[in-house]
Amino acid sequence: MPETRKPRKRGFEIRAEKDKEKRERRKKREEEREKHGEEAVPKQVPKTIESMQEPDETYVYSDDEEVLDDLVNDEMSEHFKSELVPKILVTTSPRAKLRTWKLCFELKKCIPGVEIYSRKNVAMKRVVKQAIEHKFTDIIVVHEDRKRPNGIALIHLPEGPTAYFKINSLKYTKEIKDAGESTDHYPEIILNNFRTRVGKTISRMFECLFPQKPDFIGRRVITLHNQRDYVFFRHHRYEFKKEGTKAALHELGPRITLRLKWLQKGAYDTRSGEYEWVLKRHEMEKSRRKFILCSADPRKQKSKETVGSEYTSTKIVPCGCIKDNDETTK
Image 1 (cartoon, one colour):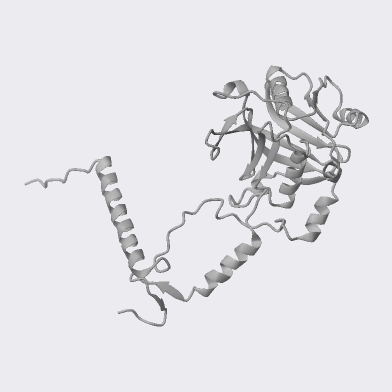
Image 2 (cartoon, rainbow, N blue to C red):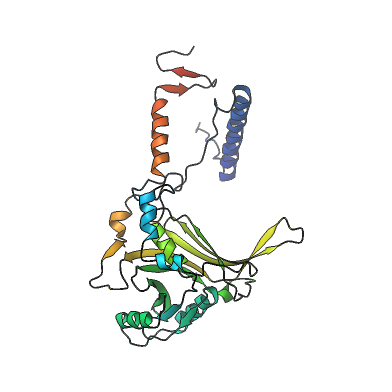
């Protein structure tokens, strides 16, 4: 007689069984937690790239007087000492096309004090020199490739620094559904997750583009959020509800995602300038848990290691009681 084979289980039957086992395990853990307490059966925290970040030596602490003193006396300190409105020159690479010019006018709607000029075939060094003579505080150069914007160079005048960002994604205002209309009010600035020395320099460069005194009546907000070395540029207006206890965000556009390629001391000298940091993918991206603009706090990392070493000689048994390794559980 030929052997009768068992019918194979379908995919949804296997998933249903796994979900059932998962619910039973969760129920058992909750019962043990109620019986023995939270410490006996700790909640499992999911591991993410953010929670597993590697610490960086250049992490900036709020109580580090030496680092804070360096930041106060850097090339951008004049902007924070004065209350003048920044004067920004926006230009493009030579012979720029329509979409690149469109991004320039989008930036003009977001950033106060912007003046747009056609660069034509003028060398960048000459543009920097003329901008200093006309008392511009910053230059934004929008680069393009294949008729589309692909990078932004940010130059702080007169002494630098200079940063170059690759545009990873771009969405114009007209491409955003139900986008609002921007106003002339000075915006509030939110700079989030810039914690290393390079990160602090980049955040201060962004801050130099905007006036220090925002017009709160306009309720305009520019957000520059760093996550995994990608800088997300967002432009919103917050609106209060009638009750007065809730607020909503109305996006004004554009949406831009940037990634830092290099940071240079001085005002744009690609041939003989001194580079403070350059992205070298094959060398720097060996570890996916280490980032340049943000890192884990080294002090907290050390405290975790010491706490972990204290409990290496203990184990948690199913009943929830902690026993030494020398003892045997009956």
